[in-house]
Image (cartoon, rainbow, N blue to C red; front, side, top):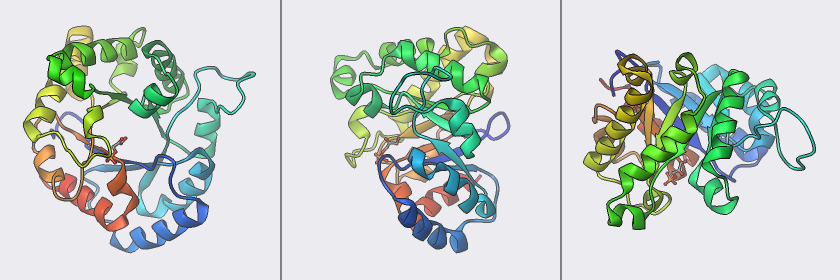
Length: 257
Ligand code: 13P
């Protein structure tokens, strides 16, 4: 973390979990235990059907709401999709773009992801762009090449003033939902590499203000060590964000200096 230059952001990604009533139970449980410190920004990315209620429910505990996906067009015949404007009007401030599950199960390409980043920025939503290598890529030694390509595609045609608003989440695919977390050194090394890619495109000023999160089996036990890395500015948390007490412990770790 380096709070002098950029925000620390802890974001939950609920994926396809929690109905409205389950979300209400979560809110009732987290409200009394939410830390008072505002050192880190807290976000919950929830299913589209929950966004509007979530924005109201979590307002008093200072948790901002995000969507988990969006379309890049601003209207049209795209059955089942939602626009950035719809998400924004429902009350979201963030949107996850290019999660590996969307790349894998819905064939999302880097080109579509770039268009989504541009659409989100145009709507003044903060994109959380996910990048990450597979186990095969790590074993072949092409992790950084692959991630540099994903980052370059995501930022294509994004002006510097907008680029500084983008959040990047480094999520090694082999660490997602497996309980197998990247070591703090592995996470730190890739996040540093991502910042170097941004520096090459936009210069040092923009690079140092971009928040880069780590995601992949981050939990109450390993969060503090991961966040000690200078280029790891927060976390994108799946499983552990479904349990109020665990999520709060991660927020507490991020609130430490
Ligand atoms: P887990 O924390 O469950 O590994 O999920 C990480 C993730 O995919 C967040 O987007």
